[in-house]
Image (cartoon, rainbow, N blue to C red; front, side, top):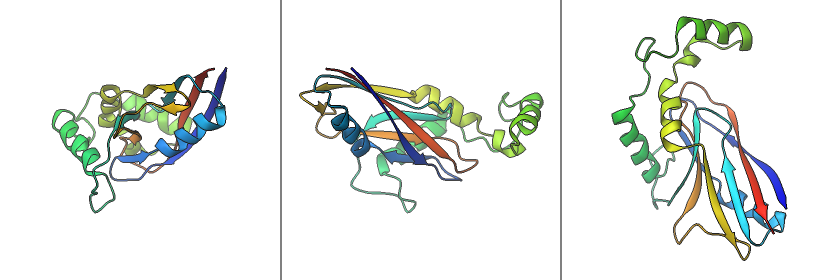
Length: 165
């Protein structure tokens, strides 16, 4: 049997956004009725990722879990946040021009190369076993949806697919 669902996630502007979607995934698994199988949590967005991590029992002033802020800080050392055009090869003028013509995008919205690269490194999905109706995250594991794009706020979607019996 296969059961599909979606989880909406609102991202923020000016910083990466992380949302703990574990409660929603647990609810979807329960609704599916599947007792043994797997759950796939996937981001269709090329600047977003899904990862399993614990919580920190503490947050930044912006409400970001400390462990997730540590991740942002570590990745920024190898993939600096895009500050201006020309910092990275992407986006080129043609890309910005097409984005404006086809989708009405503002030029600065294309200055998100760092978000694309970070999502590739972090991965856009996780697959978790389901045993006796419970997702197997370990003692501290949580499912985090991360939007690395800092140029604008957007409504994002996590796709959840439960498979099994």
